[in-house]
Image 1 (cartoon, rainbow, N blue to C red):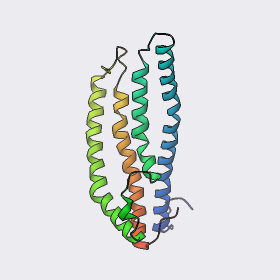
Image 2 (cartoon, one colour; image 1 turned 90 degrees about the vertical axis):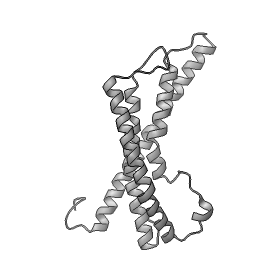
Image 3 (cartoon, rainbow, N blue to C red; image 1 turned 135 degrees about the horizontal axis):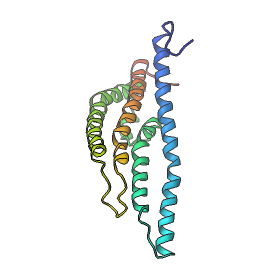
Image 4 (cartoon, rainbow, N blue to C red; image 1 turned 60 degrees about the vertical axis):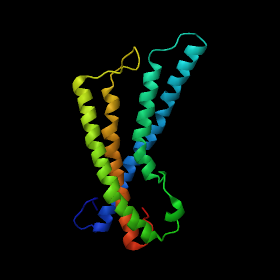
Length: 183
């Protein structure tokens, strides 16, 4: 049967959507994990060049802060998918699964989604202005283009919004069924 067949139950369609979103977050997180290698390589190159050759690089600072920022921002949806964001478990852990689902669903609906929508809008404005100006970094004499880096902000917000939809659906499942969502 096709993923969105009319004969398919609403529950199966929702599971397919959740699995699809979770795969996007998983895939994004794994790609961001691999970006640690060029980040470390850039740092090692700078340290070697600066302290052993006495000639610091012009590019290493810019490359490393852009890579680190991209890893941090784009890895946020993966972190949400894995349930690794900070939570105050001293109260939350004592609640029933149903009550946890209710609280999570309310928090996603009234805090997470509105905040991320505003973050996306502001990030989109920030990045689009940067692209329009052809903005370049002032942090070093190399002056690399900064607009691709600023594009990470709305992209990260979009990925977090997507994963938030998945987590919201899982929270609703917990609230309604009183048990954890199992993929």
